[in-house]
Image (cartoon, rainbow, N blue to C red):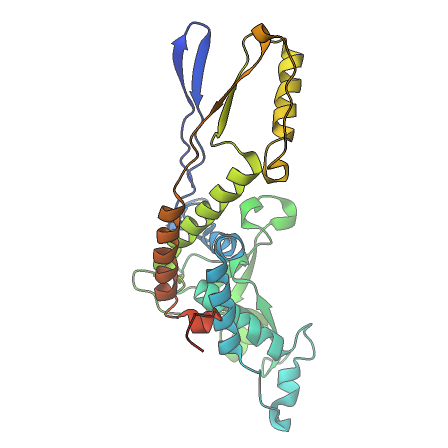
Length: 326
């Protein structure tokens, strides 16, 4: 995520160079709990964006992963709470914009996607009962550095966007940790409750159960992007066009735009007519297309199997039909 491949050029002659274009390395998000001397919070990930990367993988990487996450969330949240007059008012959560049924569904989502969840618990004036509960999106919270003397975490920092936290509208603000002490509740009525799944090797944060298969999720993204771009750009390349003279810059730009306009799946099967004199006719060289469909099919099977294993699931839970099985 931090490293970039340097663009290199290879001189073939004094008038021609071949450029190799690199790309940003978007490898597996590294799981780190970082203490910076400048910041009062514990960074989560190399660039303090591990939760954001998990969201990106959920939204863009693999349909099977998204389906399994959604199915597990539905199974955890269930049908909500059983109606009971004894705690109907509490479940209504009147002073909050969302009742506890909605909040419980969001909690289930955070547990599956991140391995934990945050709640903003607000006490009444007397600190005797909870006035309201609010869900705090997992990716917006960072844990404050622990007390130097006790080693206990006493609060959390919340930002709208940790990628741009230095902007005034995203400036992190501090909220105390959940504490049942009555005097503490009166003095600090707004508190953050953090619940997480135990993760060996993690002192403060947590990671989801599917973390070991993140590489396969990213692989799925790369394969699907490869096929999409191959169709859109038609540049693997399948054909090399050689012009026997060097046109002026404006003419070269126009030619490039014309060729691009006739690339991609929308132009497949079209007939192209080329006019010109024999000494200025372009040469069309067909390049053998990439024949890796079988390799990709085998890789997809292995990838899907690992995604199932990582989620401790199967195709039935994902809602995918298999021939010969109900």
